[in-house]
Structure formats: structure tokens, C-alpha cells
Length: 108
Image (cartoon, rainbow, N blue to C red):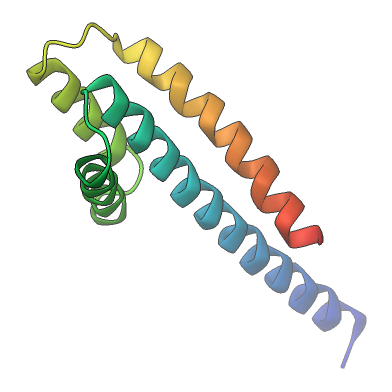
């Protein structure tokens, strides 16, 4: 095996690990944002958890903007005054927290 092959395999392995960490962080962010949104909608207990599951399912079905669009639509329908920019700020904050948590859990 050549040095080039070893480097290529190492790069592929790093890429796979990075993708797994990204998926885990985004999934954690989606759950946290969904719980936050449930609070904004006045949901608690089992209703909040059901809502969080539905938001996470939307994130799996339509990765990327699916979670944002679902929460934004639900907040609008409930007449909760949160702008798209504010929702994106919340999502960025929770993603930052989720990345830190996932990274810390991986290092332990």
C-alpha cells in the first residue's frame, strides 16, 4: 500500500466521522429547537414531546430547511410573533450548543 492510498483512506475515514458528528449535532439541535418552539406554542408535557418528534421527523424527511419551515409555519398559525431571522438566530444558538455537546461526548 502506498502513502497516497493511506492518506486517501485516512481522509475518507475523517470525512465519515465528520458527517456522523454533523448529523448528530443537527439532530440534537432540531430536538432542542423543537422543545423551544413547543414552549412558544404553549405546549408542555406529552404534547411538547409529540411536537418535538414531529419536528424531528420533518427534519429527517426534508433535511436542511424542513425544521425551519415547519416551526415557522406553526408559529405563524398560532400567531406567535417570531420573525424568520429570530428563529434562525435561535437555531444557530442551539446548533452551537449541540456541536459543543456532541464534540465533548465524542472526546470522553
